[in-house]
Amino acid sequence: MKITTKTLAGVIVLAALVVVFDYAMKYSGLKIPFPVPGLEFLVFDFTGVPIVLSLLLYGLVSGAFTSGIAVLAILARSGKIISALMKGIAEFSTVLGMFIGFKIAKRFTLPAAILFGIITRVLVMTVANFALIYFGIMPIPTSYKEIPLIYLSLTGVFNAIQGCISIGFGCLIYTAIERRIPTLTENATVKQKG
Image (cartoon, rainbow, N blue to C red; front, side, top):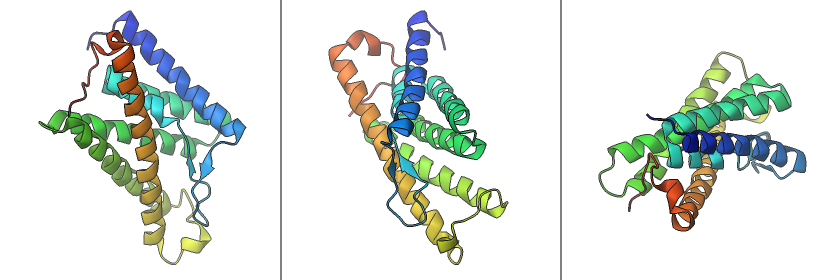
């Protein structure tokens, strides 16, 4: 992959947006908690939007880089390494799934990418949550100790919704850029079809 100055500048701007969205949503109180008792620590936000946009404009390496920046931003803000890593893994698994969907679909590539992105995020995060519970790194909320499968199912629902938010807004912004500033998408690694 050839990295041009335009690509590097674009990736840096999107990485900066990840930090801005994370800090703005945290300190403005605009993060929306998942409305399930005991799971209010799961919050909806727009941090994943520039990460999805970086995949669509510049490719998987850019998506991985911006996901890494999300981890660093959350870690610097909160000092919580597990939360930061879980957010980074969630967002990277979303763009990885989208990338796979774009690569294997012959027709309807955008719907396939969206579907693969959401499914990959849900599966990866369910396994990650299970591992954290199994190894005792993250205690399961008391209301779900009796039936951990319900806890994992509800976190899966949360991740599906958050994936839809990140992918939906990312694709919407990409489409707007493609229509209004087509020179930015001329060399996009992943071209949307169908």
